Amino acid sequence: MDIERTDLDIEKKVMEAGAPLLGDLGLELWDVHWGGGRLRLTVDCDGGVGSEALVLASRTISAELDAMDPIPGRYTLEVSSPGLERRLRRPEHFRKALGSDIAVKMTAGWDGDRRVRGCLAEAGETHLTLRMPDGERRDIPLTAVSTAKTVIDWDSNPLGLVKDEVRS
Image 1 (cartoon, rainbow, N blue to C red):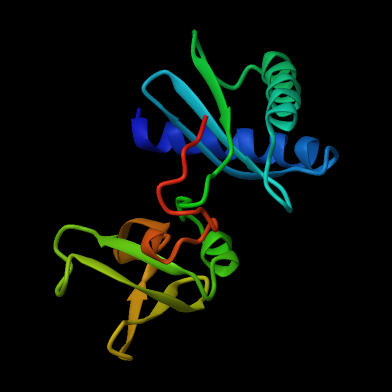
Image 2: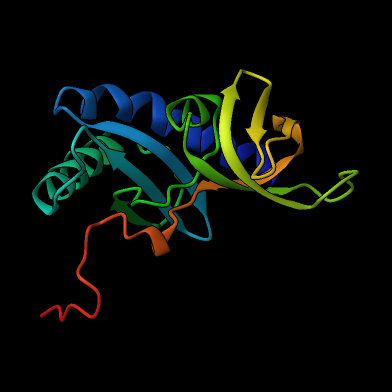
C-alpha cells in the first residue's frame, strides 16, 4: 500500500466532507493535513477566526469524522487558524495570496536558487510568478515547490504596535 497516496486520500475525503459543513458556518476549510497520527485542519474566514469559531468548527468536524470514520485507529484532531504567515499548498491558496510577499522552498534537484522570496504576481493552476526585490519576474512550476508560505515584513510594523509596547 502506498502510504503517501493513502494520506492524500484521507486529506481529500476530509476536505470534501468538511468544506461544505464549515461553509454553512461561515468558515472556510483552508487546509487539511494528515500525518503522524494527527489530523490538522486549518480554518479561516473573512476578518480572521476567533476561538469560539474554532471550537464550533472542531465540534462540527469531530461529529462528522465520527460518522464517516475515514481514518483507521486512533488519531488526534487539531483545528487552528492559518495565522498571518500561512502555508500555501494548493493553486487556490496561491491565488488568494496574490500581491503578498511569499517565501518558496524548491524541491531537491531544482536548477536554480533553492529558496526564493518575492511578491506573488501571478498564480495559475500549474505555475506561479514572483516579482523579485530587484524587479525580475521569476516563473516557477508548482511541481517544483516543496513548501511556500506568506511572509510578513515585521520591521514595517504591520500590526501598528508601539515600539517597546508591553503586552500583558
